[in-house]
Length: 279
Image 1 (cartoon, rainbow, N blue to C red):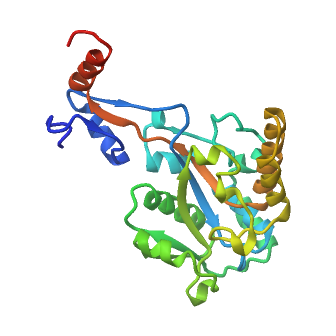
Image 2 (image 1 turned 60 degrees about the horizontal axis):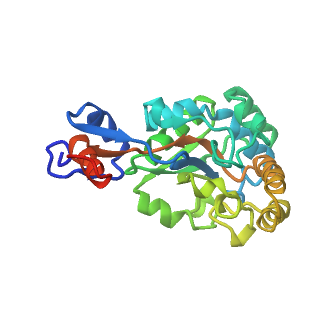
């Protein structure tokens, strides 16, 4: 309201749900910055407990994800989002197709079939359902709906985001206060670099919540850090993404960016003055 009424001139990161209002506001402009999307959406599975201690069960979840469903619910306007079937930020120099075929096969019936083949017998799967986050809340709702429509028994436990952050650190079984799934986001710039992209790691107990554990992934991340050429780094990044998708370190559901908003008359006038032009 302050921006629309001319009380301020610049709003660095307006909430996504305000973008339609700002797009229509007189005198206000939106501008994307940089070439990389700012946010990378991800679904984290708990590798410690059934059913997702089994790689086949984790891979089954790929078949439930239609990224457009998530991105339309979160952002709505395709000008600000991008489907990305990869773990390294699409549009970045290291983006590649390694392992991406697994992420493109939306098939809920196949998801349930693979879960059953992995030993799933209809036990409740506990999802930490954030209720107060502008992007994570709708993304979690889309996931829950997709799982239920596929015939999966979902135990959605509603809580605020602060409680999700606290509980996701627990390694207890879901029935004893732990969890199976939570949804989160990570930065698009950090996710463009395998060294900075900590969510792609698989360092077992030393890793991030969900605790994927795979020595090969860690070897590839280390090799990337010491690579001597761009060609070598690209080769390692492709191998790393392929392995990480096979092991399902997490499930991506697309990328988006939040444009900045500004009062066009005042900010553009300021730029002209800075460049020596007339106001």
